[in-house]
Image (cartoon, rainbow, N blue to C red; front, top):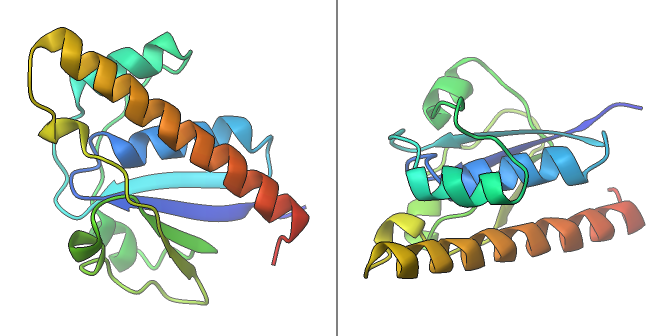
Amino acid sequence: MKKTKVLFVCIHNSARSQMAEAFLNALGEGDFEAESAGLEPGTLNPLVVEVMGEAGFDLSRNRTKGVFDLFKQGRRYHYVITVCDESSAERCPIFPGNAKRLHWSFRDPSSLEGGYEKRREETRKIRDTIRDKIRSWIEEWRNDPQ
């Protein structure tokens, strides 16, 4: 069976999109091929690497990628899912083909304030929210794979 290709996009590809990519590739049980990219690729968020490690995912060797680089390569996706705020999502290019565009807004770990422990705890909550959304979306997709 052909895998469903999914691209997760956020601003810097440093947190939310990286987490979504990891969760979909793991929880999708081979049905999906997920990638992630950013509008302005940055540096991987160390708190995200840490809390994803707690969940069994090693993101430490990941690198950030630019969405426009993937676009220029002519990549095709079944779904392009933005995980940033709505105004940033509007900057995402339209990919060739019939990619369905979805928007899932998650809080940005880089915007968290407070001490290390507070930011880590909030990053865990964001991680868990993304994981739960991925699980429910997989379930929806399996019931109606379009």
